Length: 197
Image 1 (cartoon, rainbow, N blue to C red):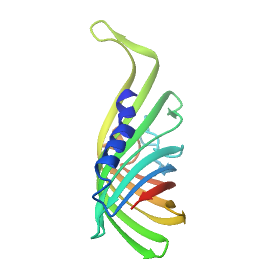
Image 2: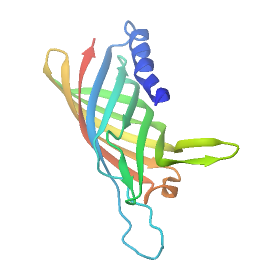
Image 3: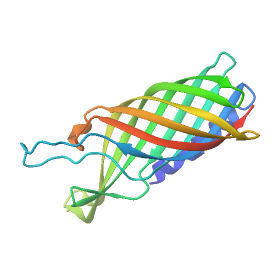
Image 4: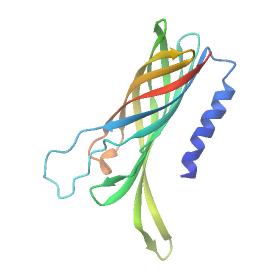
């Protein structure tokens, strides 16, 4: 968990490092849920479960320059541990870095489109631990996969520089079928944030 606690620190450093040079800098927190397909065949004795549902809190930063292009970084994770095939607890973490295009489409409304890459790390918790003579005991095992990401949202300024942003994110997670049913995952949700101009 300490490794993931560094993400907000990195976001804060990027925030202060880019303050004076960007036309617009957004910081947001949000919540979302995952959707993916479920296997409908029973041809295998062991079927990986679909990666879906659950509350996924997120934190993101956007930097948009005067030419409407910029970058985005985002981190989200499953808030409560899920139960993998009614047997083992697990928790996925999603993180991505993107090229961003943002353009004002109305007085208080900005449309944002992004595409990039990142990763998914899923922690599998072994409640009894797995002990070996040379390795000792491990309480969890992780599985990490590269992902490609496309997403977008519509930001609406509700008061001064505060905004609400409904958003959608599509992930193509490479070799995700080793852990879950599908490589394709959709994350839908909304964020609230603040724009520094």
